[in-house]
Length: 254
Ligand code: ADP
Image (tube, rainbow, N blue to C red; front, side, top):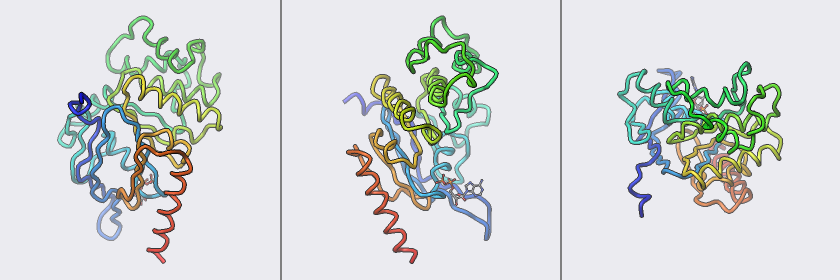
């Protein structure tokens, strides 16, 4: 299969991330080995404090691992200079956040064009419009974020994250601030980016319904992967698995 010749979008090898030292030391990631294969959609779940955000930050090169190695798009990032890492992130990594994080003074089109401009590229004619069309907002190019609904703002944020065709898109609770219908639209767009363009997506979520859009669900606890579902059948299977993991954790700590 050709897929095997494509390197993983991101790989974490024995990644440890500790904060603080001595008695105040917190091990947020306790030696993670995870591969995010190209053109796959992974959901990361787990209780608060299990290490989901830290995993996202380390896998995206926003934060450095204490030990172990993170490889983004075939490049080990551990020894990279800040400058080279910033460039790699800018060109090969996309982000979508719960709070959209659009720039209020810029129009939808200007927000989407921003990553290209930061990379020193002048957007080709029609490039930004095509991206906005892809998220169903071709007719809102001139609107500012305050003139758009939450769901529309998140779709602009997705267009902005995908315009550079990054090796991986990290999404942190992308539907957390949206109503159910807007959330479904956003999840549909993410799924379509994987299916149509071979986009790789890693999404942190608490929501079994959101996680059901992924090809694989990783369950974290105490900085470790404690379970995994491949090709989940739906939100119910994920919710049941989450409840079972919580029960067994509660039994251990009792
Ligand atoms: P989650 O996203 O699953 O809620 P986090 O990755 O935010 O988990 O946190 C994992 C652990 O690391 C928690 O115990 C948290 O308190 C700790 N932690 C996270 N960030 C920091 C930090 N900057 N300084 C100290 N401890 C931190």
